[in-house]
Length: 550
Image: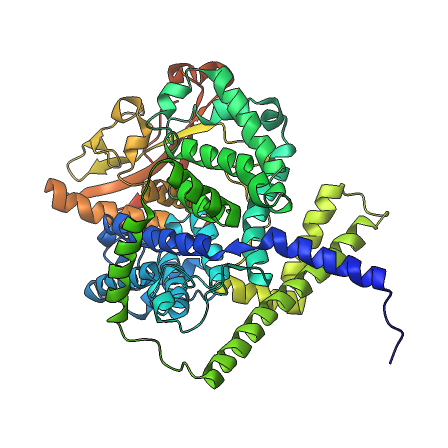
């Protein structure tokens, strides 16, 4: 045997482990609330997507399965790709919703979590043209949640359990899911730190000047640029300081969590960016540790809330939970096998992450040490990362598998773009010519004009927020895939049904307006640029150019 480690070193190691566990520890009540919120987000998302069911999720719409598979580089996993029958796809929607309800009540929670993750990935891959960073973050949080005991408290599984329930959990899985949130925030902060626009406070007024995404309170608060500048600087500072969400334990986190939550709520009522604020709030819940629940109980007592009323309701719920059959294979041997399987699965994930990180660090370090290179430091780092992902065999396989299941990590979380914010407003005009020779705007269903549609309320171009993300895919598809052509075909087909006449030609233009600090509230003073997306001939007609104004 080798020499024993000095007691001082052992004590230091013990203190370090204790400190780490204290910072990544998650109260099981927090996990229960997270479980319910995640399930509700899935149900809400299904209801919202169903508004565009035929348009986005069947072969009669703009994203048939053949187009999705042709436009996707990898082999995406999707249960929804097993069929093109609209009735069966609708049935899968319902099944996904029922599994989300199972997750909410915490019945056979681990299975429900895995199935929910697979269905969420499947629906995202069924139509990747309508996705945003919210979907990426949600998939990643769901993946890490597979390794967490979401059903430990306030669940059917907790009622059925024949053991003492854990008050909190601290392991690699809790570190990974909280680290995911910090990684998202911090990398976004680093990206923004490269821009004088963010560090000076000018970014927020410019973002709120984009009519395409502002709504509700957005139109009001952009009239006060000084307030937006302050808010933008506070948000940027929060992003850079986000590691404190882990480094500060217990009650020390309260101010930071409150400020992040306020920021996300502000986004939710001012900019139309989809589910991102709500998904981020769900992830933010995970930083609430045991002191929060202790303080909440004290506040309840001070407010005169009678805990006996909740106890009576809990008893009734427990009686209902007991009517459901308990999960099988509860013998000591089965529990031991499940424990080993969990350890192996989590260990494999951790080892894979460490392998990829080690290779990435080595290659980036080698690139930075290359004094003969005439590239800048940023270019060398970016080149090393790209080369590692594309040419290192092990890393390439890991990346391909992660991409197939929608859990590949974005290198930079460029929410609101980065490093510089987006400073262009955008709307679409589709000049089209009918068989009778009339010229119309087929996208906005009006006489042809290149002026702003909907009285300048550009967010009204889109019936749902996912339509805006889809139009981004249409715009980018002019050089990447056949998404614009499929939309043009759909417009040609739909126009006959809606107007009893045929279209002969459809052009697609994106109108860009340059948003400056002086024109935030004066869109009429902005410079415009007309960018062509596609020229299309309906039926057997060859494409014809319908020129935009000079």
